[in-house]
Length: 229
Image (cartoon, rainbow, N blue to C red; front, side):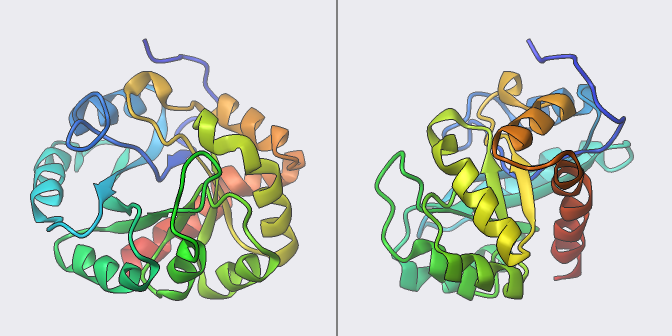
């Protein structure tokens, strides 16, 4: 069951979720319907892609997103580039965009599993990536480059990836990088309503004012960049 607690109507943005096309549990339609019931303003579906052709997944997601074009909630169709050799991130991101990705995020150097060293920096330097997901022990230099290159840094709602949320938030804020709060939901029940996302941000060390920026202003910046590419 999807939680019903609500914050300011229509203000929840989430740039990271999955469907059964990769490792999620339900369809994109189910995810978008659940997000709509939680008064999301936007939910991006970002299924996992490595070096395979992303066209099949993106085609299916675009077909399902057509049902939501007239509703109050926006959709984004994209990919999460996952466990790639860092040197292949930029070219794979460009290929995903050519295949129809409206947003590209990268599976960052989480402490929950092995991710090739250098993934964070390659994603930030690529010029193709919108959000660096769960970047683990992000460095100060990486945070500075993310700010300079317009790459948002994620505070993760997924338990195994959330261990370093405080570290990521501290470095991102010090560098002036955008911070966004994403669910990394694999089922409708894992989506975060506004109040839960705000508590997650506060737990990562953000002040109430910084929470509002992370939940409202920074996501609008990400959305503008996605639509302007």
